[in-house]
Image 1 (cartoon, helix red, strand yellow):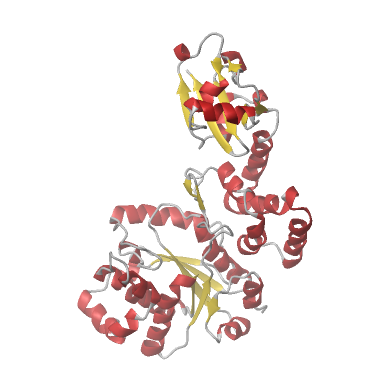
Image 2 (cartoon, rainbow, N blue to C red):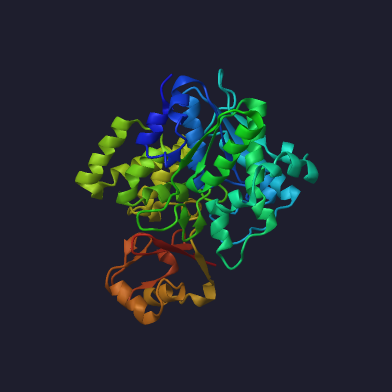
Length: 424
């Protein structure tokens, strides 16, 4: 059996791990789990890291378990949080769990022959515990001093909001998850982000105390971009795996816009490409970064993984249109599909003079510029495009005849900031 630990290490996915983990992964089939918090009906791109790590373990012959936290999701993990999250209703949790189940099936194989993945909801056991029994069987094994030493708890205690007893109990609940999975499925490995180390090691300690068995931990780095921004966030918000929340085209563009400093790391983290292929792309970044070949491959690979080949083709066609010269040949419906999540403004017909509206007036009106004077300077500098055609004359006017099908203008400021103007 090949040692998946070596692959995870060269991919940069091992932030920390228990000492014996590498040997265990090389010597036997290990059952591993990662938890997914059902605070929403969709996973986002940050969840790809643990989901794909489970998939890598499965491809190397190990048994993955995805735990959807229907029980712990009613509490909320304080790790990395500055304040307590809103508690979810059982109905919200049920809907969110169903959506996450469908998305995880894209990455791990629940029907695989010798080592099928499992998905379980920890509400199955946490929802059956009575308080006194839980305190007797689990709580007595943890001192308050032990819990206060955990970073996820100590950091919150330093904030003005403090830490509720509800959140304080989360560490015990997650530790109990590990014990239950160990008993039910022989699970001996938990993976998660580096902020989960304290919670995971608490579970290892509880398995040792209650079952006299050895368990393991592996935590991955928390992601930030090279510019220091939070990974997976854009001006429009989080980048979701659900196509109704983040369109496949926008998803593709998110990866295509990756910084040169991050793209090789993301190829290692978020694709199944082998070492040789990634190193070849690394050379293109070093020698011809302007070609953005690595970003294009990254966008293709991750979009194919999450949304399928058809959406890769559509996104690439839309990308060629976005920066091409043929946008006026598209129908309004096609343009709206490409720019479905772009801000838009309606321009009533009676406000469109017969001779047309000044491009400077229109740019200022939709707030692509702070004022008319700013809009004028932007046009003069060549920074304004209408239907992919640069407009450099501040005296230029746009009439209905210039609009796509007489109904739509696509305004662009620079290379990325778009705005739709709908003529009504």
